[in-house]
Length: 303
Image (cartoon, rainbow, N blue to C red):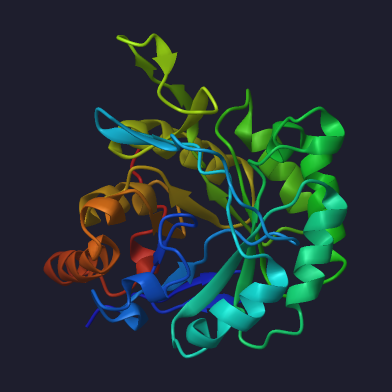
């Protein structure tokens, strides 16, 4: 029998497969498709201090081997999240990680502080790929100093595990990762989407209302794997791999490269049960290969 449990800081997951924020709603949307407790964890749709309407349509466009999105983080806000969304999430046995975003370091800290009264939250994932209104609109994880400031502010208001979610749209992701680790992050998740664009050749207009959006799906998996490997070699905290993972084989690449866990995102739009399929197939692979636990697998890359 394979023990699929993994540890991320003080957080222990039943297996290394989680869902990615923004692709799984608040969990209840997928409850009719499979037992959510088979997952290692659920990362919620992003929550912000105040409600957000999101961007105007068109917000999604399918591309070869992926999709572009510019949803704009629409959500009900922290207070309504506690009233409307948490009652269902609190019934789950699997770990629930709340993804948090803000327009300033103060907003991140305030949102997390408002969630501290909610019992049962396993960890916070800080979405650092959204624009920082006080720094000219650049993503928080585009600047090591700014990423560290946000991490430090949030660290001061919670003892729960903190996972910093990083953008790949930087020169050195490991520099940002080290800054977050030094400021108190317990883990990193990587990568968020790559900047992409599509054009309607007949109207000569961008496909998305915001012109550019985030590219996700299988097309970005090799890039994501390289960024995860870079982080693993340069930081001392666990790294959660994200980006185009659709099968157990995909997940195994990230685990072997050193990721402590993985998140399944865009694949869920094609197969709603994609994440639990990865869990089942990962377990079957370990049985066939005689792997007793994740420690034998994670970081086992041979050079």
